[in-house]
Length: 410
Image 1: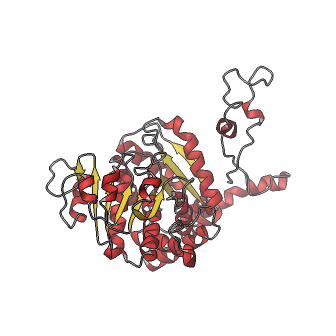
Image 2: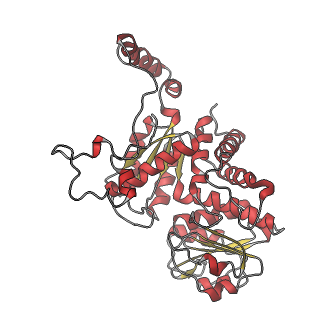
Image 3: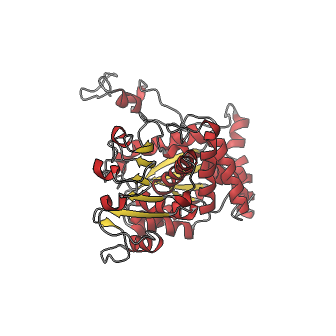
């Protein structure tokens, strides 16, 4: 299968009354609608069917030989079908971009977009699947039953805290990579940028104290990855303040986070935690007062990643911070998941990994950081998504890490 941009002026958008555009068409005044008309993907055959000989090989009777061989040796499915080259992009439409719970059908444009990014940036084919269910058991059972057709599962835009349990249970039940990109893709790119910011200023991760605003999927994953990578200390704040052991209102996920993070034992508000902090990481969509940013340590880093409105506007952040990053493409240092997930899956599929380990994620972050190399600067701590070195570097690092950790099957 190959994903491709569909011509927005194709016949698929024509009305039934002779081809005139419908009166309510958005295409004429919004190019986004024009591009999306008919969808952004198509299925393309990889073998020709030009005559009866081709037909007999691609379908019956030739296909029966391949089916019988796979039935006798199940591992052959990886060699004689698309399984090892295709990822399912699965959502329930409950946490779509900044739009929230908009349902499965409204989420499809995003899932199609994700699929073409897989293809464009990692050479990985992907199929968007929007599920009309939101229960943890329902989603897990549905994906388990779909899994034989795919080499990996990318969970997308599933709201917290359900996303944590869904991912965990699928990882336990499936022998293929399961990866919730909203968590781990964001964490990988954040770690890469932070490593380079520290290198730029002559510090190590172990010398940094970070504060994360947002204890949802991304915030929890970033905190765990920074701890795994050796951060000096990290605390996470939700709407009620710093996640700490003395709080009695924590969910199981936040209770685990409280045990892992915040070695300093901070309590109280996000603003108070920022006093003297070296790093601010925003994945909350809230607003941080300028006075709180001003209270951070000299040479601080501000990664305000909410879209479209960063928690700290870059103009404000630059008054106090040595390095500023956002989630937006119109400012330098964009923390963009597309830098991570295509290469991570490409590497995992390349070696037929049974899962994606923490070591594989950290290897991805290190490879991504290394792409910057000697060009490191305050406005260049993370490469562009269009840097052609990114996906090959991440792919190779992830494949090597999978082999080193014993989860590769070839």
